[in-house]
Image (cartoon, rainbow, N blue to C red; front, side, top):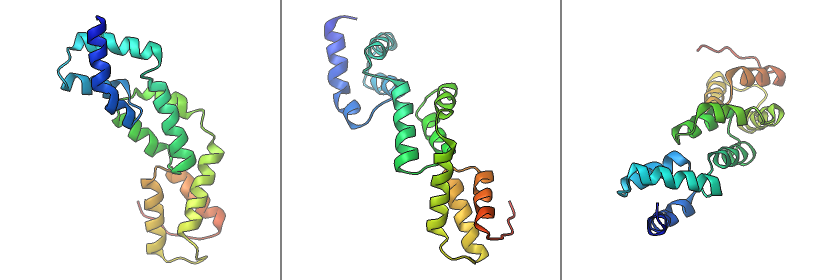
Length: 158
């Protein structure tokens, strides 16, 4: 790839990358849609990965940090979002293993307590809370463990 091709790609990518840290799959798809050949895109991505311009590892780390610590998402939801962005499952799973289970559990417990303020909530309220926590990506086992710890008894049908 010559300097003109590289400069052309960077010019096209400027806004795309500035808006959000992008995965290599997203960059590949975007550049192909802009008319660049697969060969040129592959060569560019190799150079961009080596230089740190595009980093799937960084995207995973940042998504985990933001998802767990700011948005209080469960790991299932974060994993689903990263898979949708074209990241490899093994790399996601590896990085997710580094996330503190205590932090995830604490987030789930905090969200549960904010949603259920009454010590004797109705069954509909409990079901809605459980489904909401599951949609946020928390494990069913964790949710029910937190409910048991809270002393609230429920009947749940899957």
